[in-house]
Image (cartoon, rainbow, N blue to C red; front, top):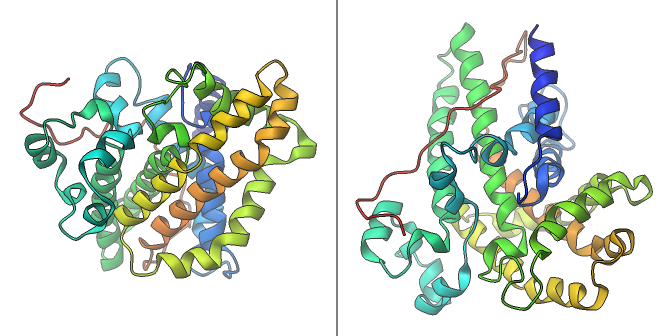
Length: 329
């Protein structure tokens, strides 16, 4: 019965259609699944990271939850600003040295930032805060698991929650790897290229995924593997916020590249466009997977019990962000 429910859940995930998701369902799943393999590569089956590979499908599902489930009408307004950061207004106010400092305004709580920086309302995005807030929740679950005191159903419940939280964080990380999720020109509306958002992140990704000779998922994994060791070294000693900001800046540097390809190529032939965008799409998905793998690795150090572990959270309850006293704008 549980396996049937799981199959139904996965069917809903890959067949339910919405207009705008960062990377679409396939892209987000690729980010989390690739990250699971990265974080567990070269590890014997009995070593702790191996469970990430075993449950990579689950992580791919959870990586889509913020779009598929949490953007439903009841929570859409609460959720939508968590998926992007329009960097231009933030960059105008805070210089590079400020954003990476220990006293960075981005280290304030969401509520504190909203109160102090009213000129940067949530309509400009709150992705960096969302990631930090959920990472804190994942840390709490990790600490419980590290104590090794949980048994039976309590242990299985905690392990399922760990996988769910790790997966949903991966969604927001994947968003930051998509150039148009860190730009005011999020749909090409400022450069007479309206519609590029959906075209790039979903139509092109689906086209690359379905063309077997282009092997999108394999290409993303190979790209991520080629960067992994150097990334681990670069990321050492840096916290999640710093790495998220670095990923966002890297994505920002690719906005013009994407727009130039669109201007030159146009959108008459999806098949031809997919070939021209392929390198950029593979690179961005791989960059998202790198940070996701690093994040998950930082929450290991406990023993996963896979014996008769069938727990799967089909419809995770919405996790609401801390509320500000300010009215929404």
